[in-house]
Length: 271
Ligand SMILES: NC(=O)c1ccc[n+]([C@@H]2O[C@H](COP(=O)([O-])OP(=O)(O)OC[C@H]3O[C@@H](n4cnc5c(N)ncnc54)[C@H](OP(=O)(O)O)[C@@H]3O)[C@@H](O)[C@H]2O)c1
Image 1 (cartoon, helix red, strand yellow):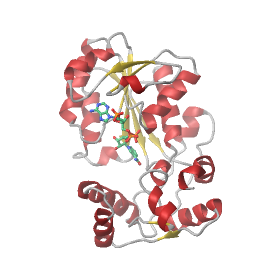
Image 2 (cartoon, helix red, strand yellow):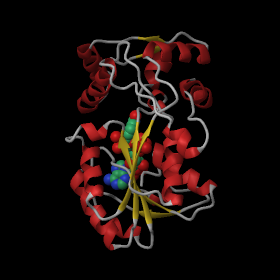
Image 3 (cartoon, rainbow, N blue to C red):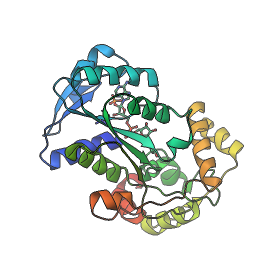
């Protein structure tokens, strides 16, 4: 799932690099132009497309915002009936503490499904800086997040994808991996690092909650997404997003990517 997106795309790249056979389930399979992997039509909102799982022993599962946990439940029932044995699910760091979170509800579905499961509880993706916040950084020279001095143990989504691919290939089971980067900078430090690497001044604007929602909506962000981000950055502001783990290194046998290496690799995004 999600092979046209960040983590799913990375999972496909990692499986392809390892020479593994795999299928990508996409709403637009005709757009799949990678040399490895076969593409099938799959839409979580359309149960008739769940036949895309036929013949696959393992599934990479992510929850696309805009879909429902009930749809994921239906997919898991179909997956089991079609012979899937293991599901590797992309969740969120700390999900186990928030029962109402869709990701936690899906974790619970998996734990009760009779399938083998791996939970990838990922911290904030570094890639949010080169996608969601790209224009603020590029056009306005500012990091517009209401996180104060709160620290975030941001992780490279490519590392998350590589852990997923390895868990699929090696058949890991009944384990939750808390995946973070190697450090937890605050956003003043992130802005300083971006300034240093991009050769221009980027400042951490640190808006108030109200200012963040008001200006985000004025700049074209959907209110629901602005409120979701506010909740996420408030967790950081309150000092609850800074926990660093060594799980990426323990699973992959190499250090997790750090933010500077990520910014160097993605530099063109902000140019
Ligand atoms: N951003 C973060 O910091 C962060 C951190 C931890 C966890 N997460 C979680 O990671 C997940 C997002 O992963 P991502 O960033 O890799 O995704 P992404 O880049 O936003 O891409 C979303 C993917 O979902 C697919 N999709 C959308 N609707 C679908 C549907 N109805 N049926 C099947 N596929 C559908 C899209 O495919 P199409 O080509 O069909 O649109 C696309 O491949 C979310 O659950 C998020 O909560 C995010």
